[in-house]
Amino acid sequence: MAKPSQTVSAQPFKNNSFSYKLKKITRNWQLYLFLLPTLAYFFIFKYIPMYGLQIAFKDFMAIHGIWGSRWVGFEHFERFFNSYQFWNLIENTLLINLYQLLFSFPIPIIFALMLNQVTHTRFKKFVQTVTYAPHFISVVVLVGMLFIFLSPTNGFINNLIQLFGGQPIYFMGDSEWFRTIYIGSEIWQTTGWSAIIYLAALTSIDPQLHEAAMMDGASKFKRILHIDIPGIMPVIMILLILNIGNFVSLGFQKVLLMQNALNISNSEVIQTYVYKTGIIGSQFSYAAAIGLFENVANFILLVMMNQFAKKIKQQSLF
Image (spheres, rainbow, N blue to C red):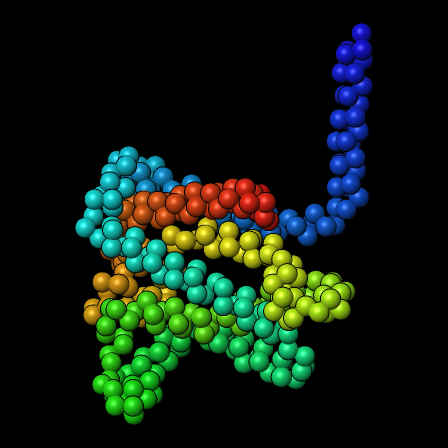
């Protein structure tokens, strides 16, 4: 007789729990009203357009519309996988993203840890201003600056090389230099801005931990190693997971602007290929299939990295 009574007594608890949540929502309806535009934005601009993904499985013709176009199944995917450019696109995209992960990702963390140790307020603000400034330069202007600085005739980089007895290098026309230039310019432009979130996380660390460590004779390096880094590790893991979730993607604007006929063997990535085939070549179904493949690969990597973070008992997204 005890088991039925336990089952009956559990039901009111559920009702009370639901009514409590409902009462909490109605009491804070203003906050949910503020949240409504964000939910509407994601629904209208992120979820409704997913209806168009079906053109990746159709031979889309604008005059027939999405529903009227002929269904071809995985034909466009097979075409992409069998393309002579497939492995070159994958290699270029993954290598650039790998170099970004190895160099562009940890440098802002190191910079934030170093800047956090600076006690001179004016100098600290000056360094922050100088390092934040490149973030506000548009991609078009940045690439124009690269062409000027790296010019083989009057660029100051080549002038320095010649000053020390070297021969001028045509950086933008040599495919071997493309990734180095891309990653170097990315580090210069994003380090200061990316460090902001780590500096914010460092401010949440209890100063008493540092005081206690100093009393025990810990050096600055040991305090960074055993207090600062563990303190910002949840933020580092979240950003790392998000970076891995975009590992197969690479913004095409900067790559496209830096690209030319001489460096295209190392500069052609998935995004630029999609732009050329989809927008310029009007092969909408083929481009949609490539984009869907890219997003599915990113989603799989995101889930795997999130599960890995859980396994090592670190902060995860879900």
